[in-house]
Image 1 (cartoon, rainbow, N blue to C red):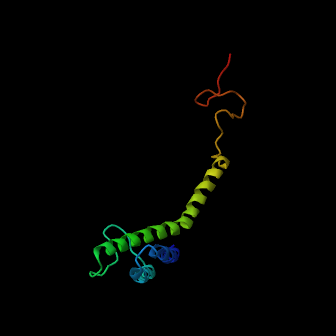
Image 2: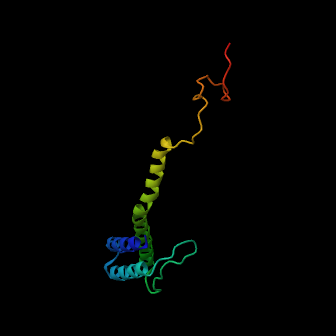
Image 3: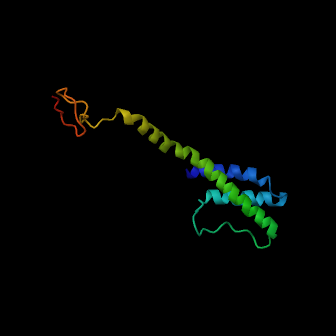
Length: 126
């Protein structure tokens, strides 16, 4: 999945870069390519990529939002094929359930043909 995520992230970064000002596009693409090739670690408390201190606050906010969007879209795109396998397994199990038997006779299927009561015992009639 990591290779899928890397390609998806560089593709998504190219799309997202179009929303940024011209002077920020190439540095954004370079930063996202570097992040994709270096293996991104995500989770609570992880620091976002560093934006130079001399970048204006409004552009820094745009870059941060673009990076978040790029990662989220790329991660979601990469997860789709990964999720196919568990879904197929669950569907196969659901289809197989009616064909699985435990080998015990049901209360209605007694060998002597006598009707069964609620506990599965042969009932005595008359």
